[in-house]
Amino acid sequence: MRIILDTNVFISGIFFTGPPYQIVKAWRDGSVQLLVSPSILDEHQRIGAELALQFRDVDLKPFLDLLTIQAEIVLAPTLPAVIPDDPSDDKFLEAAVAGNASYIISGDKHLLKLSEFQGIQILKPKDFVQRYLASKGNK
Image 1 (cartoon, rainbow, N blue to C red):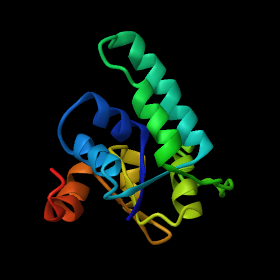
Image 2 (cartoon, one colour; image 1 turned 60 degrees about the vertical axis):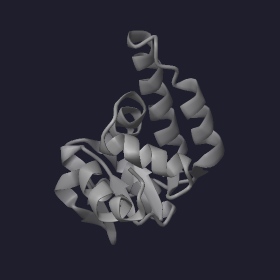
Image 3 (cartoon, one colour; image 1 turned 180 degrees about the vertical axis):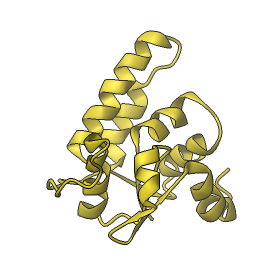
């Protein structure tokens, strides 16, 4: 199953327990295939570096390194603007289309408001875990 995680979900999956953690764990275990574009990877790294300054006891480097090795990097062409209220969220839609993702997992209100984009479902982390991971024992 090919998925996109928005930055909040990815970073939350490293720092906290709960659904984001379960999704990141499923990716690390190979149960789902995480897709990233260079712009998503840049954002993950930028936000990770900012948080590393605040939370010195959490080392994000192994996760970011794993991301560049284990995630599939897709080259996403720019699409016509979809989310005028937050154009920076368009990068997740672009990567999902370019990588033929089944799901975008997000807590972002702009993305969730769409609920789907070009056949790609947009779900909250909890909904994704309940629908797709809980039945596979990825808790």
